[in-house]
Image (cartoon, rainbow, N blue to C red):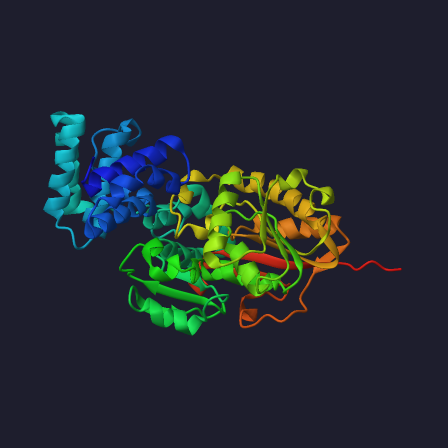
Length: 453
């Protein structure tokens, strides 16, 4: 079994690149190898994997400058070895340059032979001495190309954001996306209060803070153990969930005794929160097209002490009220989206998405929103949410929906706790990593018109 963190990081990245799947799938494939590493090596392995994906475009700019072989002709293995080594050289202060070079060259010689080992050695030594002297493109013109290279963003997205947000805001957003986010969790109020949980967490984490907007959130850094090994986790005292995602459920504002549908439940972060706010009383159906996710959701519900959740594997686009036997007081549709609002946590999303994905998913979101709307009772509440800051997946989906569905309107008349500052005057909830230090989310609360006699 491989016990070198750099070699494991290489295999994970190659697996991700080949399969074009979410990074967590590749990490799962190598979870056993990673678990056998020491804590320091495990941290290094994860830092290399996520760091390379965060800074890939910037690193590739350096490789292009020092490689005699055209970038497009560099094979995948030497390319990722170069990326891993250069990430250490440029972005990691604690690793000596000679150690990063020598270790990488040794791996290269074993895997690829002496010739490619020499090629990698030459690039790394030249880059280690001169990478800071490589000029960025269009620095004075402030173009999308400059943003793309400086902040490691796909060119199509840097151009899009530059047009949507302007230069300074785009740079600010990119800088924040490339930072390592704090860990945020949601207190399970069915078992403990937030203050008491925060005190318990001091044993295993640092920089513990109560979240500003989410009423049950706690954030921290530097966990002493993997989160799943926290005793508080095993006892079901919390779920890991970003502050922005917690606010979505607060916007839904479920009540005890109601009938509620989480229409795209996934692994159930918001499902658990809904159950908490319902005080574990009522009917809560968690629906999703992926059965394995629902199985995990059900097990996690048991850990949290929740017993009102019913799971239902179903394709929302093919569902009707006949599948549920009743209309719902509230429906949450956390729709499939590009995920461009959570790139800080999922840097692989940068390279897995394209401009076409936005239009494709926006069309699907409109259909799913309409399908979810059909399940809301007259006078009931429908919350639409996506972890994306793209207008096509946000306002445009809602405006087209409202233009079609005259029985719904944006609901602005509700108690908004302390997150009202995140609401626009049109009733949209919008969060940004660089402004709010949380994931990028969009949500809106819609109300179905009551029937008139």
